[in-house]
Length: 117
Image (cartoon, rainbow, N blue to C red; front, side, top):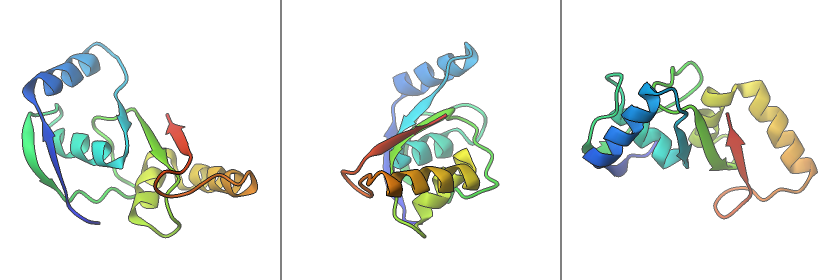
């Protein structure tokens, strides 16, 4: 998995931590946001930080920050497909992809999106 640069400002970390504390859901928009939040939240709360994430999320990963994910349909055999499978379960993702192919959804960048809860 490639590295990505990210920044989480203190005010945003505080909002996310407060939301979690109050039982609200944190929905990442995109896999970069997911990786950034999970990297910054390894200690149980999101820390304000800038840097590179090389976190590799695959089935078996225990999500600590996000409760949902909005993302596009990723290419088969990609590391990002592994990330969404880690979140929603391999069988659920395969079923969603079968439906997407059947319905002629668009894949990859600028394609159709899905909400995973």
